[in-house]
View 1 (tube, rainbow, N blue to C red):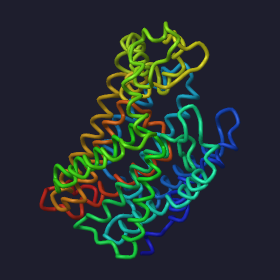
View 2: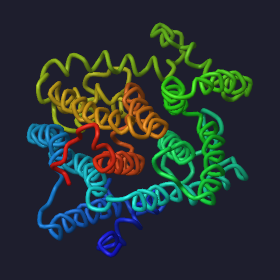
View 3: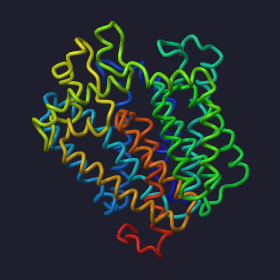
Length: 409
């Protein structure tokens, strides 16, 4: 295991603690830049070191599926109205790629997969401590939408998607037929799973609720149909909780733009639809490579007259990419996920239960991208891409019968 831990301390400490660092990193920001940027740079340096120490060995399939999105992103930066901001923002995508690549140098056997999954799951302990404090002292987490838990993250939405990921991985540890976790750890994972569900409901993030439903729905459709019944029953029970009922019913009010003339306000989904429609003209001005990565907020006040002084992102991954990187960027993004899904489907053939959960997680990421800025949730994406990278690599050692690529080995 010596090679497994070679130059690993920094990477694994980052993996274990990144979910807890937002409160500290926010205090270090000056002019939008803080210690978080330094951590990102350290991560990329660590990955470069791994590549050099392994004689420039890089996974061909990983490069193949990521390179279109990265290349188009770099091209879009060259036409950005704010190249420094655009480059700084796109560097976070490079960190996602780095986390996806890291398992290539570590994962060879089941034992290594177990270690990495345990690190991801145990990264949730400190955020749960933060959430516990919020439950005890709710005033600091109460705003216009009532009480919303955000744990150690900067926003309830980011915490919510992190919880979807952790709960899905915990569920994977219960169900995988290929990777056998020890009984003690499974007990820990079940406790963490329950905390995830409680906190996820308390975030009041509807799109994250949908994401978790998709994970279990895919699992139910592919493996155990009784989970579909469980989903129906739990949805009914959850709807009886007043705060959840209020969040769901809010979707059906404030949908017409005419309400603005009466002094009312649009609900969040209706507001987003207006934003997407307003952005379409700008998208069609530069349909191929867009206006430059992360330029949506730069132009926001020009094309959206309902706001006078505050810029927003698209709250839609596909609209954001189309605006920033053009339709070539959208195609490259979908190509990346199509290759990932293809590999996970092959993994599904040797681990049906575990594979179904991973497929559900990837599908939920794609679906929820319709209404959220998932690409900008850095800490969540670190864990998501690392987890997907683990099984993208591990599958090549366990799916020989499916004729997977062998050029990575």
